[in-house]
Amino acid sequence: MLGRAVGVLDAFAGAESPELSLTELADRAELPLTTTHRLAGQLVNERLLERLPSGRFRIGQHMQELGSLAQREVAPEDVSHPYLQDLADVTGQPVQLVVLDGTDTVVVDRSEGTAPGRGPDRLPAHASCSGLVLLAAAPKPVADAVLDGPLERRWDGTPGAVAKVRAAVEVARRQGHLELRSNAAGTVSVAAPVVVGDEVVGALGINNAPASPRSLAPVVLTTARSIARAMGAPPTGAIPIIR
Image (cartoon, rainbow, N blue to C red; front, side, top):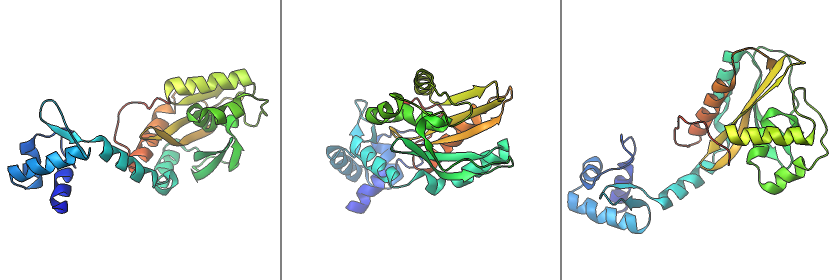
């Protein structure tokens, strides 16, 4: 019986629509219609399936919650390196994947590209573009611990004043990514969050690349979404908004 119930759930894998009729469930699970009807009812009772007013079925809330738990077992650095390597190859710039550790960011994966130089493995969160993106999604006590200042300027092109840091964090929240340009240095830094479910699990960034009219943001965003999908996040064409 358990195997048949799993077969009903498996019917959604690879389906063109997230919603299936009872007949479609039975056909894809290769089960009799009456058996499928009984199993689907049991799965609805357990919130593993949801029956819509139209009579069609989709994956239920409890199934999504279980899926989120499975996603969190995969760390971003477990799957990220091929994507970082591709991004470094395309841009020629060092690429870093960072996570928040208290009020600091820590590099968990990197690809050097062809540009010289290697940044530090740990920085205050306000001192890099990626850190500002993570602050935009951080719990309020963590963000406040940084944004209440005073701040030490540590990175060219990163705002050093509290007001400017707060403004950059708000831009990251609103846009779902951040691009900082330093006219004096002629450089640009770009970062995007890696979003799995409702959780920002890391940030992907390129720091202090030579500025050019062509923005690096689209390719950084695409790579961040690719890492998230490799972790089990559903594919999306939308830019993730940090909330």
